[in-house]
Image (cartoon, rainbow, N blue to C red; front, top):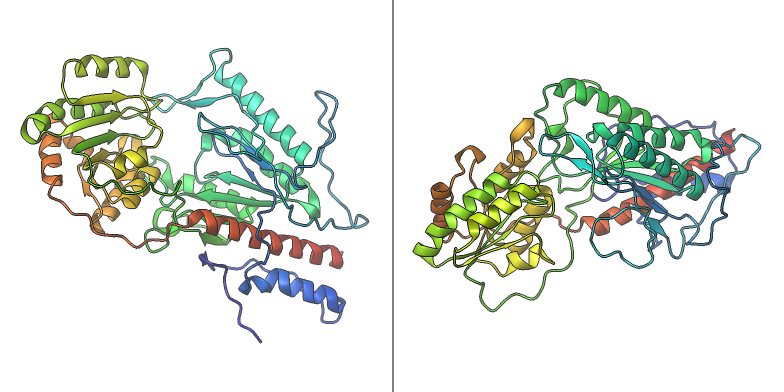
Length: 459
């Protein structure tokens, strides 16, 4: 007997009970198929292409066609027939992984890769107070959410994907439950041939909500009810799901760690870093206080160190704050303000020092570029995720941390001056989350569809 081995990066966790037919009821070929599908994860799949999958984070929904981009029949406008659960008389459909999938989803202003169909949802987001707002002046937020839900469900019915992957929900994105729970219901209404349903998480969840215990219980209940797997985009040596998720109910869904998901390959190293400070705060929505302090600190740093500053405000910094920054920066030599840059990571790679918040992407950019970094974690409204990430990075010797309560111009200038003499420690973490995610989804599809075949054989 061969011992079962978990998927690469998999936290085995508790197994769901499997229905086992009495010995000899399955024909030999089906028994072998079941073994390969359910137990054969000790062997990496030989298929080098991903299967069809769907992503529905808060701001985008992505579907990959199950049939290699072949044309799909058009329905009469407005018609959305109900999903039909396949009964015992219907043979299971074992579709091969496509030679070329098609992905559809909404996007921001990033370039759209070829071979992908994007479905643009009515844009919504959060204001500085955390309220959900419509980013389209033609629609109220209520109307935008109704249209998003209808478009997601219509797309699901039309494409019939092999897998659905959502971001964070039900561990977060509670305000989007009205558009995501109907998709979960639709997946399970599809019967024995239903798609694989997976959620993907970043490294650390928020734990500072006022109703955190109730939130974790609700998330665990929904996960156990609906999900087939959880992908955590982190190295388990840095963070594990149980570090920031504490329900009293047992989580029965398998958890798989993919490693950190990073962006494009780094550019060639510059001969010598520019004597420049890069200040950023993600999309900028909650970065105004840090930016004001950075403008004030620049005068001191330019005078004492000759350090130039590039401040990247981000597209979501409120317009009033952006205009106030531009006014305060006027007449200050060595200070440059931009809303965005083509690649912040490339700018960091050539910079002497960085000051930023400590979101997931910001942390990975710091680790990949090995820039001297001071992080000021965002921590308002119970948001403690960035603070936990910052302190872990600090313990690894990768960054220095300035608590947001201490941020002002003189303090920031002194911290940056000290940072000029800091050498970050190299950190050996798994950064191949993209490749591992593809491999895991392929393996999960093989197991899911093999198990589906077994269920049909037992009917």
